Length: 240
Image (cartoon, rainbow, N blue to C red; front, side, top):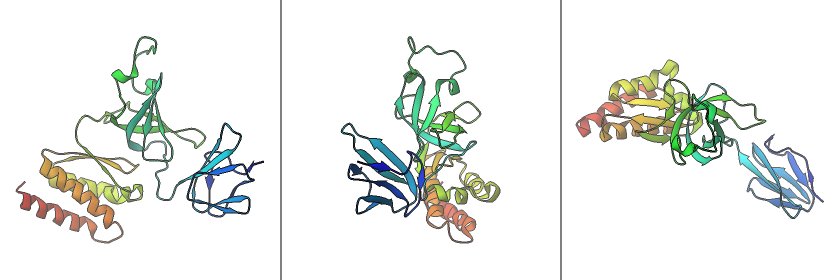
């Protein structure tokens, strides 16, 4: 008989006991078994599922470096599934974003005669705001507001969420410098996804390379000036 010591979606730390017993199915490399007890080996989000045969499947979603939503965050999400009155959105987080029809449309919606696919389909990228999140339920998103909505052009760059502050810079210094040097529009999602819209492909490639350079060298000093020099060299080399 299994005994579960953690609740689903709770945060666990290395050494925390997760479960005890023989009716346990481990579905994670981050769980260590000692006798008939199971322990977490990393900081993560516990996942507990009771199977049809009565056993429990346990796993851990790593949280180290992962994006944890906060109300007010701007994120770039990918629509993964569609329900009757909401979309499920991948926001590069252990939590999936929920976008309800009320946070998309300004008019009544009747699922009996209308389809959400008309507005957003699986595979669409969106710029959204996190409007609510308390870890007890998945984060709620909205695309109502200036600069929010479906992405129709540009490229998405993914970096580690922990590097986002370096890409933005103090009071926006880094991202504003890149936009001034290239004439591109950049939308930085707090979840580590960045939207880049440029006048041409060459400039887009320069911006993407610059963002990757920031990610790789985030721990160094004098980075803003090095990135500025890099952009100017690349623009000269490419004749843009």
